[in-house]
Length: 314
Image 1 (tube, rainbow, N blue to C red):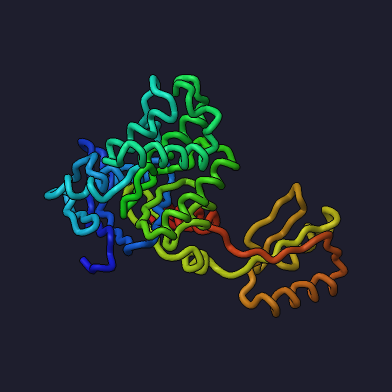
Image 2 (cartoon, helix red, strand yellow):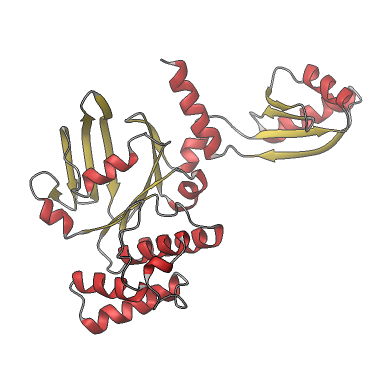
């Protein structure tokens, strides 16, 4: 393990009876960086996080977190990590403020420091007005925000965020993104699991895509997008006749069509030259377009491409 690596997972395997969940996961997170573990439900994301945070034993492989072996030194691991799970880990009989102060005291903050940190988090998560209400009166979104706040009462060097924005409205999600970015800017190492492709794209230094317990791709968002091709040219036509004629004219480069929107999408190898060539061909064929746009591949394109290839390989 390099001193630059904060999390190292090698050949990690986990099964429940005959059901294989992890099939030899390899994963490295450099100190002070953020890696997103991306995949559909059942891919093995939460199982991996539960193993890393000492909540679940594994069958084979090795795992170290900040130099602590998860199997041999779980107490050492627990001292250097923070965890936000998918479900609320708070006391319904206490108020929001009391939950935060209690957790701060468990993290061995002084009484004054715990209260001060609680006030900061209540403001950050827009919970000041509800701070002195029992948690049982909170809405689902408010409970989720409080759970996130509780997990951030202290600032451990390694933070596991297991789908932290699940159930949040768009405004709260954006606020959480800002908090996560600040944690990283403050030097934390973060492993983020998410089903939201945009979230991985916005936050992570590197992305690891897993499906059915295997790593199927990894790299920066830019690197992953580059794997599935270049820019796309999206053309929308004024009528059905022009749309059908354009499909025949451009059939060798078309990668998608939309019959209802009268839209054709072509793949560009050399953006400037290819756009000019397509427009010249359409002009020569006297086909009028209503609008056009050049777009970049998205992580949605990456994920669909990777999983489609995986299915084809079965």
